[in-house]
Length: 252
Ligand code: UDP
Image (cartoon, rainbow, N blue to C red; front, side, top):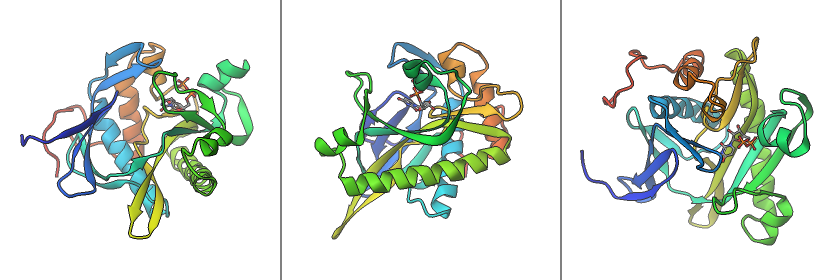
């Protein structure tokens, strides 16, 4: 393997310098963490599945007009992506009550929301990713009002599109997290979708049974986490041929 310069190691991904300026190689690990790193584990095959699922969803989003950082998938665990300046907020879109919303407001998981909710969290492990408002984001210059309009509009379009796409695969999109970044060209700054969209960052429930097909299986010790991710990949039609063999063989 050629030696590459590692730029950053996160909880579930590693970033390496890309072959061209302005590019990065994003490597998907099998590591899983929850509750701000308090729970740690490995889900064998998760990285391969997330790489595939995220590639599939980002290609579709790109096709319907949402600019993303994805250039192309390189192999089973890696994608070539555009280097962006990450905006330090997590955008969460919710359709059904779950997770931290249920806890924070004492609501019942599974209750339908009368309209989708967009929430913002400040990306800070030390502070436990606190919930913030657009006021904080613009006051602290994390993003401008104009950029926030773009981010919210894009997030709601992504929600509509992904809700339909998952529905077609027999899956309910309960909620999900997005990250955005800036790309600078000559005299333009553009906001594009970054990070990943996968069962690590979405809540996905089976349409008929409400069975959880996402990271809550790991968070809540429900077991069969890899199998659930595999089921999502299978329903989206993106499982590699030898679907039971998550090795690092190159796929072309
Ligand atoms: N989420 C994520 N990364 C985070 C926090 C949340 O991908 O650091 C996703 C999570 O998987 C869920 C959605 O964002 O699909 C909403 O998460 P929530 O605020 O309910 O937090 P949780 O209880 O999952 O920590």
